[in-house]
Length: 207
Image (tube, rainbow, N blue to C red):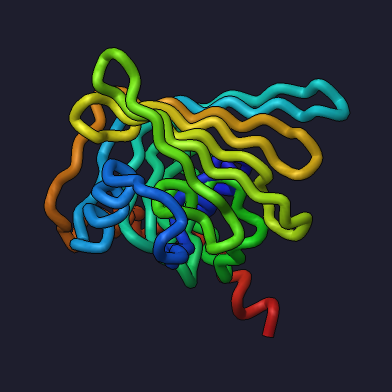
């Protein structure tokens, strides 16, 4: 779940973009959906490959993505990130861990990727024969987490796949199935935790 988390922040945080870089109507429409407060909901699968060791990790579950927050539901773990705090419930241990959210340590932040990452990236958009769109974000800045991010949208403009390559050539692939945008619901980003669950607040330990 942690590796999945680290990718979902990039898709989730920076919504700023330099004007006039390129004509990208479908990408602009995607970002506008998040700006309007809509939530992208989908089943997801996530794949990570370490370029140095060759190690591979996979995870899957359900995800909800908002402008600066997201929620993941896996087999035994649930997680909510609201841009400032990360809350993870481990059902197998009946334990909740609350910690300060550090965007730079999150490889998986979906809202960052889906909303443009930051102004150091250039963006290109290409329409496929099936009406889908491939959006490519690239950066030469050595301080960005990712050097290349490719976002695939279907003909309805919904994300179906994200492929990201970081600065040391690690590969992260996130696929979405049955995805759609819905209106915001305050309960979406609230975890249901049993009263008897062990609670660990790492924010207090940091103090």
